[in-house]
Structures are given as C-alpha cells and as structure tokens.
Image (tube, rainbow, N blue to C red; front, side, top):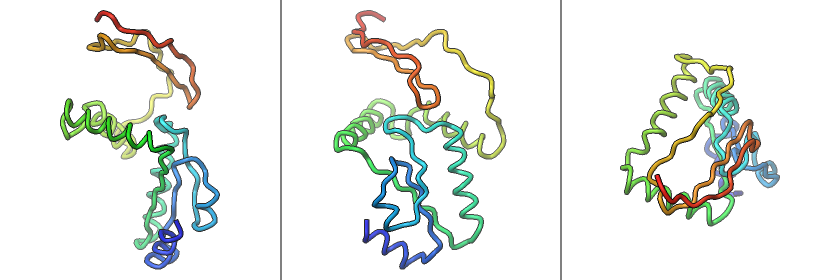
Length: 162
C-alpha cells in the first residue's frame, strides 16, 4: 500500500484521486486521499450509486487533463478469488470468452443511461414469476434485494424436474 501511494504521489503529484469501492479502510486514508464509495460484498451496486460514481470520475477527469482516477477494490477472502476464477472459467467454457449476453445487455443499458439516451423508469417493477431452466439435480435458492436490503428469500430446494 505504501509503495502504491508513493508511486501515485511521485508520478501524478496532486493529479490523482482514489475511490475505494470496497468496505471503508482506515489504512487507505492514512496514505492517500480516498473517497469511500463501497457497497456490501457479493452484491451489485445500486444503479444510482454507480451513476453517481461515474459522474464523479468524469468531473475529476474533465477538471484537468493530467488528472487520473484510481479505483481500489479489495477482495474479501481467498475464497472470493477462487469463486471469481471458477465463474470466469465456467463462462469461458460454456458461454464463450465474449461474455454472457446479459452482461453485454447490462453494459449497453448502462452506457445508454450515462450518455442520456435512456432514462431510469422510477415506477416500481413487480416480479410475478421467475423461470429458470436446466437445473435438474441442483439446489436452487433465490434472494431478492431492494436498496441493498434482502426483501425476499426462498429456502434452498433440490430441483428434481424442469
């Protein structure tokens, strides 16, 4: 951490800013000027927070052509590294190296949102049914979050038919 802080200060002087998207860390604040903007591990960030971060990055970068954005994300355990590697390997093997269609759609939606081509619909969305296929012999559990708080969770259930 000290080496990274020294490298940033040496190369970019006062033209760098660090955004921490992990849990707040006091050791980061001691070495660097840090904006803590994290969210709980293993959850997607709320859309409004993600948009806000992107706007902050843009404002910082536009303010001076020498400015640099540094995004710090600390993984929480060795298991999470293994989980991510396993997911990546599974996606490459079964879906292809170009990524999942849902990821491509999400990136397209988000980029359209940031560019102003589309706007967020403030009306609530109600799920009446979730359909999942090809899971015979697996355990299925669904957890739904609203504003980072779980609002619904099923009991883990073995799938015995499709």
